[in-house]
Amino acid sequence: MELFLTKIISSLLFPPGINLLLASIAYWQIKKSRRKIGISLFIVSFLSLFLVSLPIVSKRLSQNLQTVAALSPLKVTQYANSQRVDVAIVVLAGGRISSSPEYGDIDTVSSKTLQRIQYAAWLHRKTRLPILVTGGSVYGESTAESVLMNQTMLSAFNIAPKWIEVNSKNTAENAKFSNEILKRNGITEILLVTHSNHMQRAVAEFERAELKIIPAPTVFQSTRTSWIDYFPSARALYESQQSLHEMVGKLWYYL
Image (cartoon, rainbow, N blue to C red; front, side, top):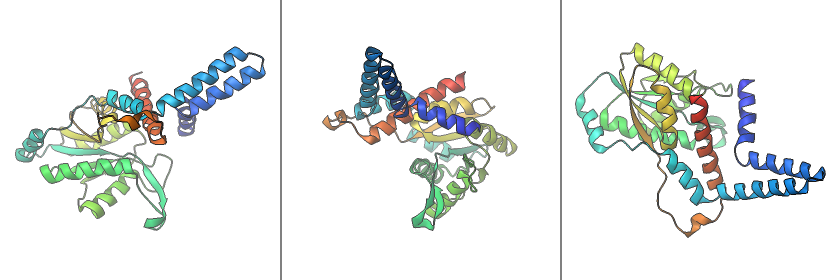
């Protein structure tokens, strides 16, 4: 029930759900002979949807969240040469694709999760540090996302994660349950892998434990712009929605 309510609220809070809600309220106001209020809400609904559908706007929103710099080559080399046994790589799940027909109607990792896995695999090959993958069954699926991540890392990168955390349903639980596993195994420091626009929230949650967190963000928004960025697109709308979700998520976790 909690997940269902969260999904409903999320759908209505972010575009395009909030825009459809505003348009519905506008129509209701006009039917009640409150034309000025109704027309104003229609304009707000349309203009806000148009703006968040522009790549130039979605890029700015993403860049505002990408305040954590990428892990430097020098830092990676230092970990590669340290030979420490109390450091690990932690990779957060980023969703799944359900019943993929090309794989025989089984679940597999989403593109976001695959991007995180790819970077974690690269870090592992450079540093030889062990990997923990974290992510459960958010909507009650039979297979946890971390299990799918484990399968993909083995089949696509020939790398076996050392630990698999299967119970978490959100970022806060990723941190809670991963930290329990890490502490039991003598880990005191982690390279935390997730998307750059999700890193602020992830670090805030993992820092609640007595671990040293080294952010290792991946997938940065390009700062280059062109004339095509001023034309609306569905991709830009999706990216704006994701950025707004992160901003509200940060506030919610803070509260």
